[in-house]
Image (tube, rainbow, N blue to C red; front, side, top):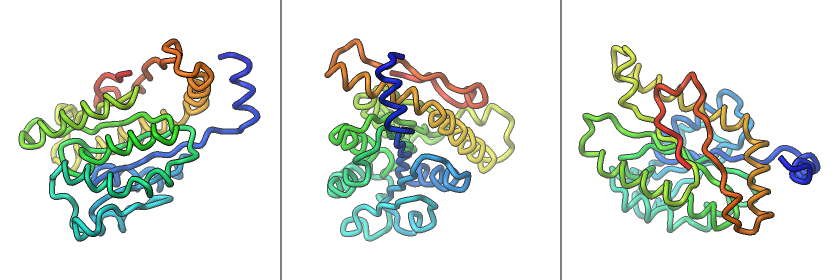
Length: 239
């Protein structure tokens, strides 16, 4: 790290970080992070009004009341995308001013799959460095597989770094019920996010380096490592 970059961080203080939790799976993670006093700001975004009201977060954004009547997208990713686009000004206002954002969403449903890539684009538009964490469905959820793959592809085309967390891997770890497996995945995701947040000063310095390079290809960041405790549930980190 160059001394000039280190000095910028020292003068500016800790980087401002937002975890942007999108959709049902994302909002479950948001509540868990909030309850553990995560030092990042938690922004929860959902089309399901009741689920959002039950989510613990620093800020909650309810999108598309006029379209979904508060009932969610019912698995329609195109509708999830539209809802985020309709509320793009509100979302940009919420994320503007952060140094770094981590978008967390389940892939295969409607809101997370459709809205998360739009939110990544909005972060880029306001100059916020964003990575993403995509929670992939179980193999028996064949109806969700295509949507999940497309949502992941879109996220990866926008974000330099995407962590893929595979629900399926939890089934091979001896959990007796689906609820146990899902709780294990949620716990793994929370631990992984805490690892990202601990690396925030490094992330911020690289963000400053990219800005200073004014688009130079040499400023592209390398992939992040996956902590040992959750590596068995996570796919390869891509950048």
